[in-house]
Length: 72
Image (cartoon, rainbow, N blue to C red):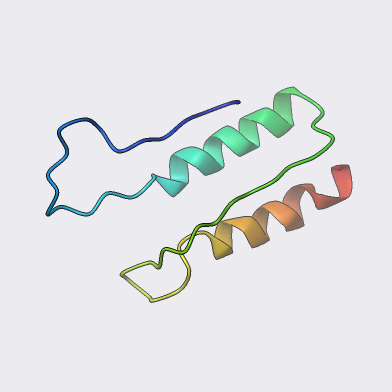
């Protein structure tokens, strides 16, 4: 495990919380730069981006496949 993102304790129930994609993307980049992963899995969940209505993780998962797919 290279990172865990959870909703902070006492986060207001009426305030949406999302995993910060940019942080996750940075960790993925660091892991591939510093080690030699043999497999990589992503669980995109069912959330959607409020700004464009797209699935929250799909763009990042596609980018990771393009960047690192041949190395696995």
